[in-house]
Amino acid sequence: MRVLGLSFDFHDSAAVLIEDHRIVAAAAEERFVRRKHTAEFPKEAIAWALESTGTSLAAVDHVVFYEKPFQKFDRILTTALASWPRSYFFFLKSMPQWLVRKLHTARQIRKGLGQDRSVLFASHHLSHAASAFFPSPFEEAAIITADGVGEWATTSFGRGAGCKLELESEIRFPHSLGLYYSALTAYLGFKVNDAEWKVMGLAPYGEPRFVEQFRKLIQLREDGSFALDMRYFSHAFSTRSMINTRYERLFGRPRRSPESALEQFHNDIARSGQQVLEEAMLNLARAVQRRTGLRKLALGGGVGLNCVANWRILRESGFDEIFIQPAAGDDGGALGAAALVMAELGGVRVEPMQHALFGPAWSDAQIESDLLRLGAKPRRYERAALLEECARRLHAKEILGWFQGPMEFGPRALGARSILSTASDASMKDKINARVKYREAFRPFAPSVPKHLASRWFDVPEGLDSPFMLLVPQVRPEARVLLPAITHHDGSARIQTVTHEANALYHDLLLAYGERSGIPVLLNTSFNVRGEPIVNTPEQALTCFRNTGLDALVIGSFIVSGKDEPVDHERGMRASVALERTP
Image 1 (cartoon, rainbow, N blue to C red):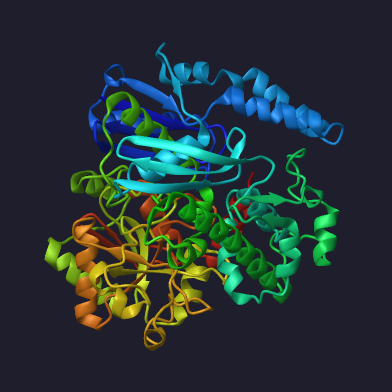
Image 2: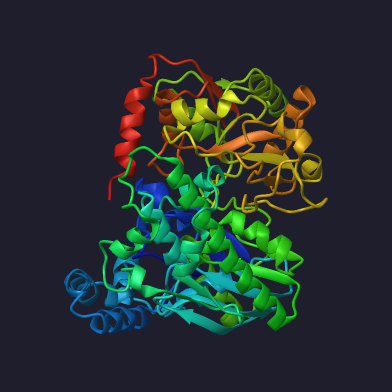
């Protein structure tokens, strides 16, 4: 059986193709159309998925969408009428979109596919739950999903066993942990549904001075549920603002203007708001563990990308193991919808995800052809020589663009489309932020480490599995002086553990660098600049190399170094800021 799962029309559109027990293709549309978090129909991702697997559309047994539009429309219409007349402008903006297009999702899909066929629908949070549980290594587990909002649900929990999945309870709109965090993001002057990572990165620079104010915004209950104090929020009746003046008065200052200076006040707001989110997620996880009695947890939804909260759940909630798949947000909804149909109609569960490498890949012949066409002068290496040369360059404090094998599914670069450097030079953090990524100086970087060596460098149990960079433990105190470029302000690091089975070349690079330097840890960040999706093609990788402070491009069996023209870093920063602010 073959199932094509789709997500689109909100943000992070994606297509996922599952064949029996295997995920054979998975990619977000943004990587093809080059518009970050695009909501449009994933035409290019679908075309690639079918072509790359040699599958005709006629050979796909089922097409499934990741939510139920009529239920979502019911929520939007009901809440708009309930808050009338404050919702007047929201109503005027949203109703035409729904009546003309969004209520006709099946028609959109048939038109996009160019084929008249039946379409299945899975509810939004059931899709998230399926994306969390079915690809997990657990035969049985508790399940929690949390995000902004689906149809009505914003948070749900249940359990899964084998091919069976059941959601037992849910919390409904407008009460939402995802929207609580989006409001915090907006108050700090960052872009909602894009820059929540920035809040997490900013929080360690602050003190929890405003925790009590944030606790006024959300009531936590003993059964794990919660309720927002809607007097402070506008998301129930507005598309223009998440918060109101009451929210601003609570903290004594108006929201920050985008790109204005960040002050200690903003650091403290980020820290306080993040802490209260962690409290809410911990309260929920502890209640679910008590209710189910299970020791393993599968976590899905966009809040599952809050890796600081994830680490606290693993350490403090009573669960022994936690699994979060790499595309926990709406792009992963396409995976969940397809996996759910495969389980319910095919009686087959997808195999556990040991890696996220389900995207496009290029052969050496294709890479060489593209590089030569674009005027580059690539040098070819055999595998062992390539690893040795890269280890040498990294030890010499070069910054490498690393483009290898299939692209990752999800927002994290995990050793396929990565920018790499030594983690041992403290100046690398500022250098890469300013001259390569063109982003804010406070943004942290993540380390990659061979799984079997992780506990030597990080305060984690031996054998901890963190392949998708979704947990944030502490760097061991004695290692912080050796790993300053990846040690965050509070001594933490968002680690990726790497195995030979999951990514042999990247694993062996870590070992080769470790042999040369004595430290088998590399700084790993996504291969892109601020405001752009991660690079997808050799041409995009070469363009990024030429326009940034990268010292070399390592792509397939080739290394490209040397640039015809000096890089204008000020121009790159201006362009990236403008790109990020584009709606």
